[in-house]
Length: 433
Image (cartoon, rainbow, N blue to C red; front, side, top):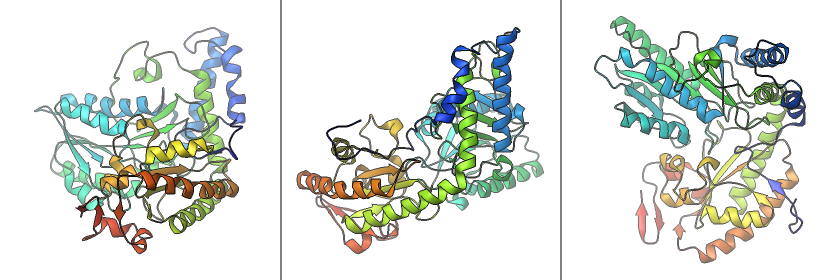
């Protein structure tokens, strides 16, 4: 691919994955042979409709849900929007004085953050649930945020930037306790629990009954399936209104002719990911830990972001001080290494990561954050190549950087030193505490 570099290493699997050949093979008939409109009554349409029904059944089985609870949408962004806007829209008539209250975590993906901001402009109150130094939601704080008019709580299953895994089942119990209190107070307003699981699929348990979620999203683009397709689980009894209108497909919640090849591809990709999960998780976790150890011991002033244990098996997110993350990405790209700075969905901006800032870190940590995400083709040799090249890039960038973070190396190996009480970091004469 890149003839002028020593080696090509892709480490941005949390952004996008290549389509698995088996997935591509499963999709191929629905591009040209069984191309019919699933709403049609004739044979070609019925074949397409059967393919969708089979895919829905496969996904429902993996999620431990009913087939009628699975809705297909054009990617996780649309699915999350349908869940969030659709849920509050359906409850609007139940809010006697208008408005309503929504809780989202401080480290949500921008699709949820920006949706919450839009709902705020429509009159809904929005609260941010804080996280601890490793990115785990503060459960006591979350429970205290729930009000009599809270209608929706949105906490992502695994963070797309730092890989931290949230205790979704415990959060569901907190919400259930609030529901029971409402019943005792004769408050009929429901509280729905939404979770974006785009990064969790293929790595974590997706059993929606164990997790206790009401709205749950999985995406094809993160699990070696096609882009532009996602499945939204809507627990039976959860009220969701459509956010746009058309022919009434997908239970009248997501109108538009269904993307049959993509739906088939999503189901096949999720099936394969579940089949490979245990073995691949173990392999990736071993590579991840090896990579983290080398980065934090061989490159001075490198800090691990996210929880050291409760994190995705493929996620390595670090802040390397005295550099700009975007510059590091470009320098590494010239060496055949592809990574990102935080979320690829916002890579067009130079704003510091809101996720890193929510951990209690200064702006310099956010600007110097790099995300390496491993995948099925990642090898130990790939990691060794990155660790061979990266120190040279860091040295060059530090020589031209206007920022100098004065910290002791023994703090670097312990991320809590920067998030705990009294930790201080100096940069260009300023002290952050």
